[in-house]
Length: 379
Image 1 (tube, rainbow, N blue to C red):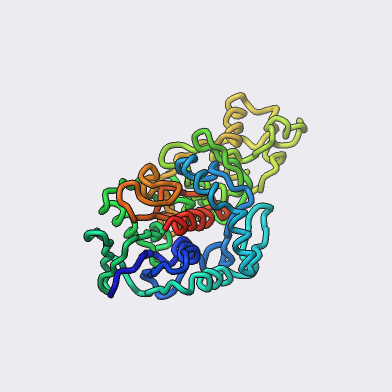
Image 2 (tube, one colour):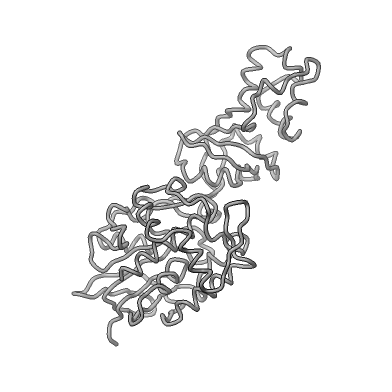
């Protein structure tokens, strides 16, 4: 069989979007290890898929900001929304900035399958590696070998192993001499050291917080869980955290001293947080249930920790619970104008396999779509 013009490894968000934007006449084939396409997309956002975000900026991404900006200059959220609308899908705006599918992710998946219909997909093909043979790429799989003039790696990361996630994209990149920033779970809950196990007693409770990770401050809800802490604020904090301390403000936007106007009421009753949380925190800090004015300076200092509670996570909930993978193919070795390797002509990367990861809110699907369109137009 004659070689293809292009092989795309992965029929996820990036792979399907790339196939949909290939020029007519490009003889391409998608290789997908699952029996169905876009398995991760199908379950994201509670099955409705948070497609993109109105507040698109490199600031919401872990990765080289100039590289990310270059990609979005070529295809951003406005371009994505216009493209979807042109094909009959108008995403719904929720939470002020988040765009979701109107009823289910199936709408978006069907749109991409229809748009890329001229590019066949071989399902159940588990790719095991790739190499260069003269002018051609040879992709090896348990279903045989496939040859093409160009190769696009759109395999995703390691999160959601239950739907077939694997590290084959990273292995392919390394085999061609690319450096890979070590992958780690991202957008994931954080586990606790023993001294913070008191938080496990609050499992199921949620409250708005602001989390400081280095110089970055992240607002949103924190959810106490049996394994540790989760919720949107924690998921976003996990993107920027690798090790060491984070600090939690349990009363964002509130001056602590302004709460205690009553000289007679106990301090705990004047804190506008769930009683269950306040009681647990007072026990942890060994604070008396007394009026603020009668507290010692030591007790007042401890109480001030409600605005800057230090916590050193033990780790994360792992890839099984992670919404994304941070790390990946180093962007310094990829041309942002084309998503082509700077090391190997004809080798392209798109989506989560690249060392660019966004916060919660549709940022990672936008990145997958944008990087895929740039790659496809170059091919």
